[in-house]
Length: 463
Image (cartoon, rainbow, N blue to C red; front, side, top):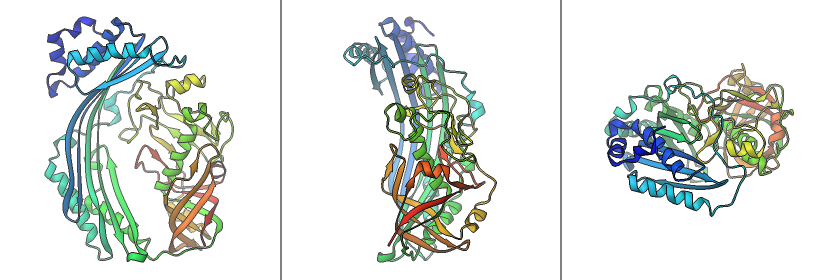
């Protein structure tokens, strides 16, 4: 790392002067680490986020919200005598950052002592960002008019269907962000990533029979984004299939989870195997490492290295790179997912899941099966395809689930009518044990993903 002389005025101006020298921000972060050590910090971590974002929201053919902005911010975490202080600034001037470091070191002495705080001692070997397909150079070149037109076109196509009577609006978003990290344990790295997304929300039906639906596409590469026509048509289809819903009697039946619902369920599971939930005693999976928590067909992966995926990154927010890991292997829980702090509390090792000050997924997914979704649906003699849930009703301490639900009723393998105003209830532990079928339709709509699945039985509370 550079020595403290890099904080002289001339060098400082070089580090922050122009957009074309963004990579020089890594040198700035390294210099700030060195400065903090000279000032007496035991450990320090410096993170810089530098990027641009665009968001166009349109509704009924008019622009409702338009955002185009650049931002640059630096944050630090200082540790001294097992005490921690944090600070952040969007002002990267020399005096501001020097004072910020000094103040943080001083403030650390007023915080509580915690033997588990500290930077990771072993960060692993980061992947080459170029191999991960994180950044699309086409996205920064997209002009604003084109992005607005795509949102307008998506909504226009959707409203062409006479059965759609209202729009919640369409949106087009892009992000281009460079992440920089350096710490006093010798880690320094950076990567640039991009995202783009297109979405639309719709409404159909009359006042007493109003239904809603939406669709979206989100990708790192613009060329892989679904077209306005595709997003609009899928949103229309997913809205209209809920027209004229019926109520059903309370009963226990098999449930088929669509991929977005599988992802929702897996998101709940992730929160229960998070190291913070375990050491805080707020999970039903405490003391379950090495034990069977699901059926033999339950295999869950967390992988930060799948090229182009939404949860892919060369290292986590602490600089830790942990390769693909099998979190649950044929029903056996192999890992709690941890950042450095949780790992130390649990006498484990970080799994590279530090994210924004907490613990988050990389690409966390259920290993797909071989069955087409249509075959899973056709196997239902009587049951529900779950398409949407509302409300809260998730208890990680017990694993209990109780949420308002919408879906499609199936009899003899055929969808016969939509269902609304019901509540599904069950227990996540039981669900993991009663996973009957797993589809082959794994698609990553976000960092947490799952294919179509069939659960042997859940309770539906209706009339």
